[in-house]
Length: 315
Image (cartoon, rainbow, N blue to C red; front, side, top):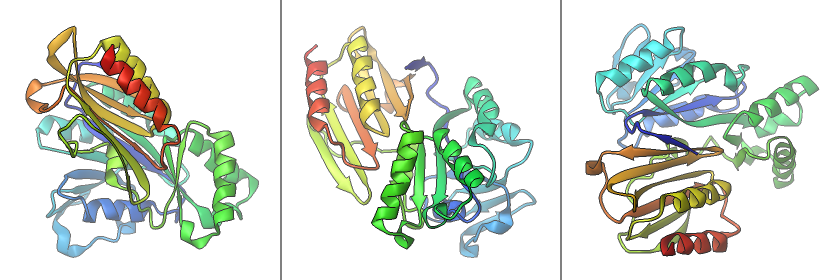
């Protein structure tokens, strides 16, 4: 787990997948139904995006601006420069999504992402991969191994077009991927129906202000909220955060420690990555401990999390 002093980096998500798997569907949903948030999407080809012209505000050579505040840009060699300019412009952005080429290894962007993170311009949130459940069983050995290899490099794999195959076929695909990619989270979807908050980690304010633990089921993902008053021990919280990592695809939260009661820290954990960042006090209100966990499936061992939370607060 890394402690990062920067709290203003823009959340960044990469999305890969073979042609026809559903990447364009996902991008269209982000651009058309942003829910009041402002996203910038980098794509390989404008022509592949089915854009609602009623949402278009302006079109330039390599940039389309939308009336809802979102922006679509072409992905080129100046990508790092473009993101740097966006970050330095001071314009309020809720996230950046990068579409990787259909056959490109998701790891091909790692050097650029590391440079952006080192400069404090972006925070890598999620490596997403979209696969076609209907086509997976009919692929040759090389293509099948390529998809499995890309899944290993991803945080979350959408097994898309689940409505076109049987439950048994979905289970076979998931069993195959679980063996090769045990740390990758899997989510069967139809039309890439995944909540944006699971990609960018923008859970918003916790729903209740009382000291409660509230598991809830919404659509196709499981969400858990917890809030407690009182400062907590820093090292005990690190141990608790590791438990959250082992149970949830994504966990976020705000915490204040006993050894620095005036400071507020944000936890951002996705897959095997976790960062604790000190943030401005003005951005945090409410209880000293506010946590949210989200997962593609319900958590089987909620009792373990309950016990760990009680132990944290009693330490």
